Each structure stands twice: as C-alpha cells, then as structure tokens.
Length: 340
Ligand SMILES: [Fe+2]
Image (cartoon, rainbow, N blue to C red; front, side):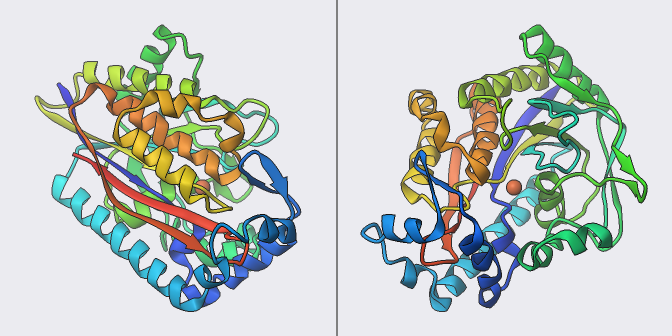
C-alpha cells in the first residue's frame, strides 16, 4: 500500500536564482509592464507606486541591503527543504505545478493534466529559447535546468490511477502520455517541476508524477475550490494505490506562488494561514480575481491542501519572505513549508 508521508511547498520564482544586485534586471521589466494586477485592479507601474505609497516603504524594501537579507533567507529555506526531503527519502514525489506555455500553447490548453508517460526529461538549457528571454529571466533559467538532460522515472501506474479516480470523481482530466518535441528534440518538463527537481530534489532520480494545472491563462483556469476538490480526488487515488512495495512512501509537492509579480503580504499570509488551518471557508471566499498572473500559482498549494486533507500531516511554515525588487513592491512573496 502507498502512504503519503510528507508534503512540501516551495516558491520557484526567478529571484531565488538571481543575485540581489541583479534584481534590477527584473525591475526594469516591471517598469515597462503596463498591466500589473493587484487586489482586483490593473495598474501601470507608476500608478502602482502611488497606490501603495501608504502601505509600506517599498524603496527601503527593495534596497540592496534588504534584498540581500531576503536572498539569504530564501536560500536557507530551499536548503532546509532539500535536506528534509533527503532525510524523508520518499519513493515517489507527486509535484503539482502549472504550465506557462512550456508544453501547452494556444492550440490546446487543458485545465488539469496528469503526465503518465514512463519517464520525464528535465532538459539542459535550450540556447535558442534562452536567447528569446529577457536578461532577468535568462539569468534565472539555470535554476530549473540541469547542465545535462536528466531523466526521471514516472510511476505510470500511479499516474493512471490518479486519472481514473479523477474521472470517477467527475473531473475530465487531460492525460499526457508523451513529452512534446520540437525540431530541436524533446521539450523538457516545465519550470514548476524542473525547479523542484533541480533545487530541492537535487537531480536525484526519484520517481515523479507531474500534475499540471492551468492556473495562469484565461479562459479555462479552474477555480480555487475546483483545484482543492481535484486535490482531494488525487489524495483518494494515492490512498488506494497498491504501489510497488508493502509500504510505498509518497511525498506531495506544491510548486510556485505565492503573490507575484506584485507582492501582497496580506494575501499571502491569509492564504498560508488558511491552508495551515485547513480553513476552506477562507480559501473558497477569496475572489477569483485575486489569483491572477504568478499569484495564480497559489492554486498549486490549494490543490496540495486538498490532496493532504485526509491525512494527519500538518503544515509547518519554514519561512515566508516578501522579496521586493522595486519601489512598487513588485517581486515575489516567497513561501516554503513542509507537511509532517
Ligand atoms: Fe511559475
């Protein structure tokens, strides 16, 4: 039988892999971006600075001194997660992430996808793709990509069990049986899974089931409630899975979040506390227009909360680090947690 023995959540934003003196590269992109979603409204950069002036001193929050502190704390937290995971040594990790036009594009964009091939490749950096990225993103790409292609086994019987259970539970989930390719070869698994395998699993070939949710792109983003319920269905599938041995130990991972690219500490603490307290009332009451852009990845955590809802594991917040890169408070609210 399989048992869920551990859970963990980690932000995966570019600032985790960018030295603090170079966070300005991403701030430069923010200044050019005319559409920053924040608390249900859309702002250009200058209006966002004005709107947040009384909230906090974001000039100070984005100073090099504070950035260095945030960077150090973020690194300490990812290291702690990596070490704890190594101690737990699960047989399988189910990673819940989102696809950001990595495997899925405008031709087809499923709301929920379970990858069920026999293995999955986290590919080395694609030099062609690297050239198309802004300097701030390109610098951070090394965090999700290994120096050489890495192949991870996928327990496809578990992936199929998750698909079959979700269909029984009335989720018409997409099944991805084969990694996509283009003219340069196989397209590696996306950043949400790649970051976790590079930085937290440290490239060990631990079997993985990638589950991808379209949190990001309209018009078919599942609601927070639906993500939680999908998580409950995944939890049922894992609990019923026979597994390859008498006691197969499964870990669950939430990848991404919390608020970005406008840091909203109130939202982050409200969501993290609600997830910690299993307070679905608060989670489901959050308006959907709070889950836009990168902040939508909070739904990966909500899905994991659903998966773990029938276990006796409890969330422990390793650290929450509001990491600002500009005077508008843009950046990422970084969160790191375990469920034990
Ligand atoms: Fe992301």
